[in-house]
Length: 456
View 1 (cartoon, helix red, strand yellow):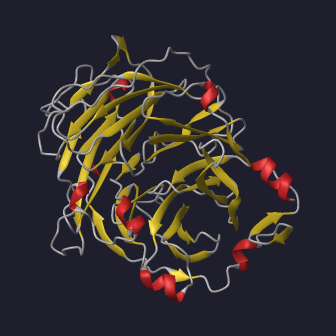
View 2 (tube, one colour):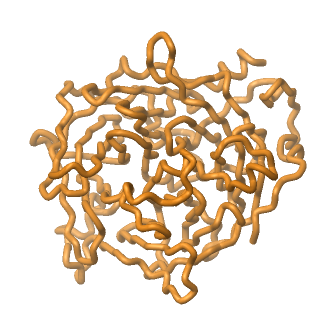
C-alpha cells in the first residue's frame, strides 16, 4: 500500500453534480443542505476543518479580529476541497507535509488534512487539492473507522477491529499493533506535539517525548490500552500494549463496584504528554505522569459536592500554548441526522480553579462536558497527586450537537467550536483563562448556507 499522488484531481471535484468555479473556491451551482459530521483543529490552532456527511470538506483560518480582538473564522480564506462524496468522511486530522512533497507537489505550508473515508485515506493541501490517496486494508472484516494523527505529525493510527500505524509520507503500513482479545476499538487518542507545525521535525523533550517514540491509546467497551511505537519500527517488536486497564474485571487490581453498570464503561479518552484521562458516564479517571503497569488512577466524580452525571466528552488544553482536539464517543449509528436535543441546564459562574500539583511542569486545562451541554473544568499538571478541584466552565449553545465539538488553546485563550442548528452552522467561542463560557460567548462562526449564498 502506498500513497499515490493525484496528478489530475478534476475527477474528484466533478462527481456528477453541476458546479461553477470561482477564484480559489469550488462551488455547486446551488446550495444543497449539508450537515457537518466532524471538526478538527491544527496543532497550532491556526486552521479549522469540517467535513459533512455528503463528503464535502471545508478549511478555515482562525484569525484575531482587528477591532474586537476576538477569535473568528476567516470566511475569505475558506477552501472547499471539492465534492469528495458520496462517501462519508469518517475522521479528520491535520498532519505534517514532508519536505519533499512541498517541493515536488508545490504544497504551500506544512499542514495537510488527512481524511479517512470508508476504505480510503486522502490527504488535502490548504488549497483544497487532493495531493495523495491510498486504499487502506480492512481490519478484521471491516474498514477502519477511527483515526488519530500521532505526535510526530507524520504517522497516522487507524483503528476499528484492529489497529495499524501508517506513514503518511509514503502510505506504507509501518506496524500492526496487537489488541488483546481482538475486541473492537471505539476510540483512539494520541498526544499532540505542536513543534512540527512550527518547522521542527524532531520530537522535543519539552513535551515529555522520548525521541523516536510514539504513543497511542485506545478503548473498547470495557478496556483501555496504550502502546509505545518506536520509529523506525523494530521488526522484532511484539506490538503489545504497555498499559491496560479493564473495568470490572474479577482479575483487575482496580476492580470497580458494579461491573455490569453501564456508567462504569469508558465513554472516551484523552491523551497528552504526562496526562491520560478516561471518561466514564459519572466520573473521570486520571493518570498523571508516565503510565506504569498497575498504576491506580485519580478520580474526579463531583463538582462542589454535586455528583457528575452523563459525561460525554473531554479535551486536554495546554495552558500556555498548543492545541488539542476534543474526544467524544463515536456514534454507533452512521445516520445521526435526527438527534434529540436536551435543554442546557444553566449554571452559575465560578472562579477558574488554580493548578493542582507541585513544581513548574507544564499544566493542562481539562475540559469535560455532559450530554445536555454543561461544561466543567479542572487544572492539572503531571505531578498532581490528589484529586483535582472541579469548577463550572459554562454552557454550550442551546441547539448544540454536543458530540461534534473541537477545543484548543492559543496563547492565553481557550477556544471551542461546536456544530449547531441542523448541522450546517458553527458557533465559535474563545475566553481568557479567568473567564467562563455562557450563551453570550457563542457568536456564529460560520454558516454553510450563508457561505454558498454570499459567494454564489
